[in-house]
Image 1 (cartoon, rainbow, N blue to C red):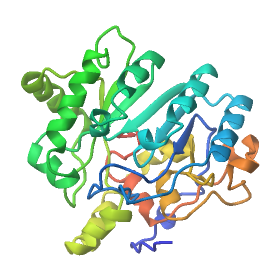
Image 2 (image 1 turned 30 degrees about the vertical axis):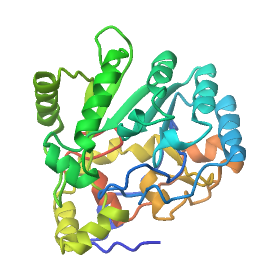
Image 3 (image 1 turned 60 degrees about the vertical axis):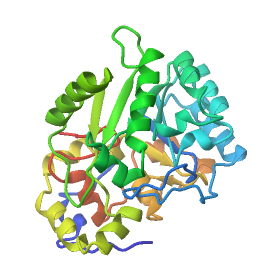
Image 4 (image 1 turned 180 degrees about the vertical axis):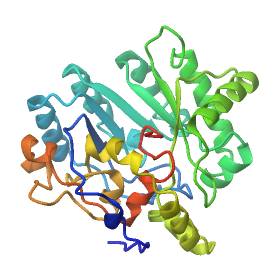
Length: 320
């Protein structure tokens, strides 16, 4: 487990215990394999990683969904497209009447054998969230790899051509922004306006929403902060920006994260830090208990300053 030291400790900032308020989102991390190795990745995903959700664990997840009306399945990774059973998982979830959302780096949808996933996603009504860290191609490429910006632009055009982001299609296309350096994101509303205008004017691209994410000081991003001697100042900035108004809408209060190995976590960040759910709630999908998990006490640490600074941050962007 990684220890993050901040003053004061996050637990001292929280007035009382943080508890869950139901499970509206079941987030599935299918593994750490990815075709990219981005500088900001809190998971440390990359082409060399081998961790992947087994067929047995995936069946346990589907058994939970069959028994409990959790409305949204949020699929992430790594690159979830690299899981060989992704299509079957999506089909099962759709057959159960659930909304399905897939988080993608985008560029993998230009590669074989993944190109056909765009039409598959469209045919199933899957919501797609594409990571596009910055409108400046140089910033995005520096963060995610040479040529990534132009390839993301190309895949966004293909998603638009399939109906995504087009008025009346019902196909939702969202983008995710995160800073390229050791600083917090700007206002989500202002950035969304800029993204929509510039992508439309320069590339004729349309999308629905922009999610602004605060980089979490863990994983590869933490290594970057340490390497550039920015870690202490970044953490101090998060502490200074703590906003108690974010506490009511923290994603951990309505989301349960399932790791590739079936362990249960309050969020994907706790997953990477090796912090499973605790305080009497079952910590593996095999022991799923809706009553206990829906009202569980949240496991917190100093990394939680990342979700509570400024306008707050979640997998769907600002929370205030």
